[in-house]
Image (cartoon, helix red, strand yellow):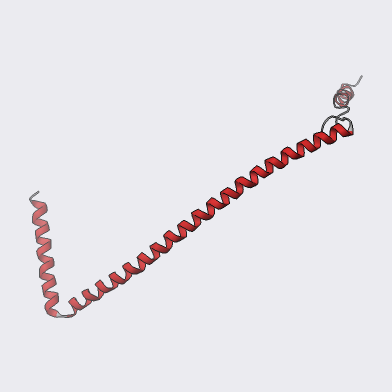
Length: 122
């Protein structure tokens, strides 16, 4: 006897009566099983759809809150830019006059000397 053929025959005998979806049964019993499986599958899909719906709502809320935060940050940056621009204009006015430059140099030198003495005495 051919061992390969015996193995093939055993496999065919083992799976004899089984269809691709399961064991052959009467059509009414098979239909009830199919309906029950379909209902369970639909309930599972409904649960997944509900979960995805909640997740998408949460993502939408998170995106909206981040957009509001970014808008506030943008407004704060614009205000800071305006304040900084005004400060720079004042510095330009101070440095335009020669006596103001001398005064700034004198104050800056005093601050540097004070810091050097402070750090050396520590």
